Each structure stands twice: as structure tokens, then as C-alpha cells.
Figure 1 (cartoon, rainbow, N blue to C red):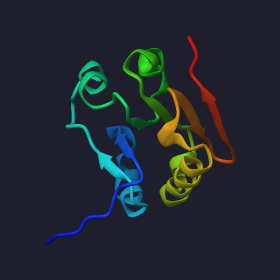
Figure 2 (cartoon, rainbow, N blue to C red):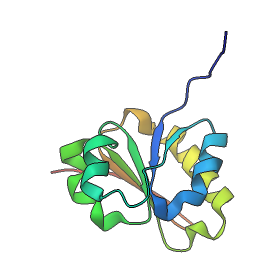
Figure 3 (cartoon, helix red, strand yellow):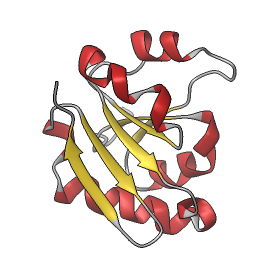
Figure 4 (cartoon, helix red, strand yellow):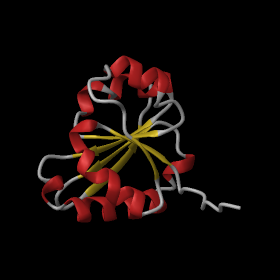
Length: 121
């Protein structure tokens, strides 16, 4: 019998921040990486409902987060200079803000700060 541990949560990792994927898997997240070139609308319809998107492209996804019911972890400019640190900060914030149970939200991971806010209509 093969045993598998339950993942902490499902994260869809945008191709622009793919260097985080393996590091987030190491932190027990189930990471989904969309096929390269998949358009944003297809990603939102098929992969994001009820999940969390990790991206550095906030503008393309924020407006639709309420409609498709997903959260966004936005990796701000400069935060990817140290991908391991960024993954650690995502992991801690995921636990601290109980992101698995949150309504649509934006978590901004910056170089020196983390900001959380719910997305409201």
C-alpha cells in the first residue's frame, strides 16, 4: 500500500514564478503548474476555483478572483531574488492567515513585508 500525506493546500504556480514550485512542494503544498502558454481565462476556469494562485502578475487575475473564487499570492518585484525565503514566507503566511479557509484574498509577499487583504465587491 502506498501512503501519501495530505497536502496543506493547493497552489497554482504561474509560469512567471515557476522557481517557487519545488520549494513549495517541499513545504507540503500540492503544486499545480499550468501548461506553458495556457491563456489566463482557461487557467481561471479550469484550475483556480477554490485554489490559490501564486503569481507576479497581479493585474491579470485580481478582477476575476471573486467570480472564480480563488485567492492570489502576489510576489512583488524583488521578492524572488531569494526564492527559498519567498517560499518560507508564503508557508508562514499560509498558516498565519489560514488561507485555506479564506474568501478570495490577495497576499502580497514583498522584499521586507507581507500584506493580506480580502477582496471585496
